[in-house]
Length: 286
Length: 141
Image (cartoon, rainbow over all chains, first blue to last red):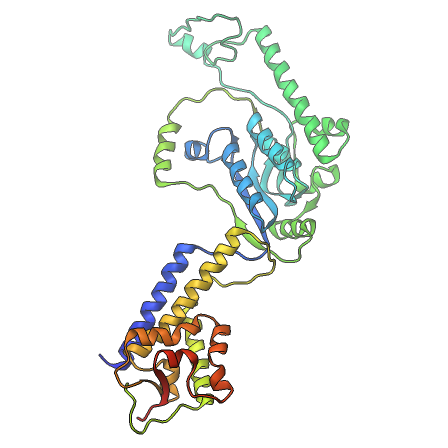
């Protein structure tokens, strides 16, 4: 074998070892990092794997796990929550907001297309909110609206056989009309959640509760409208969010690391099966 | 390549230049490995592990570059450019000799210490060259 050929072969052999090793050990980081956590679609209380096809949303449990992983990394100096969500279920939104409040590193919410209702609750828990001038924010309110099929079933001569052990056990079933008493009870619960939501936003944003209550009509605001109302702190995009996070973290430069949901091959199939299951009524804030 | 009767010791400047050429080639060879830019040192096990892994793999590949080329070709690319070659005392160079003489290339500091006899002008061989019974000679085309 020629000398040049041998040299090339040895070089390629060693280069391949370097390549494989690099692939095996990944890309270690050695410098300050800003974690970016996407919060996309409807916020729900399941797991990402069981709802990706049905809703394409964000699971509070999985999001908190990713947030925890990011915060525990000693090189992560701050976190940007990249929000594009219309809101979601009450408890799931509250869980994420509570998790954010428990973090001692800076957290900045960056609202892209939408950060309304439950997603705004999450954003309000962060240290600063950056929103695009044309993004949708606010929409502080609670809904539990649903389709009622009672009359439709009657038209088809299908009857709802009511078998309950308590008068409210089948509250809000879509197969019968709500009674006045049931409606009043349900609305009371909604207002309780609404009050809690308003109080949380007021506390998180350091705004007078009456001001937030006046804004909590369910109306959404554009980013540029939300700024003078005190619902957001800055108008801008990713660069603004990153700069503010660095400023809050007292660092001048940082790498980015995106913490996305990890979906396995089998998870796609399990989520497909899960999406065929009927879903229970949920109290939603969106 | 066994010692020839007319062997000539390689001058230090040629050896240094050959090493510089090899270092450049090694930089290309190690380019797939993650680059290390430390802007903030935090004593964390994950970081220490990453640093050690990159250092170990880089050092092993460097030693292998010299050992494999010297064993199979009798010279590295840098030595080829400057007409230098490895000579073994009395017999053909075997792989253990090639490996042993290049062990100090595991780290630059080790290589400098190993090269002190040449730098101080006391010998034409590094410590590990003496142990491995090898030496760098001028290669006659």
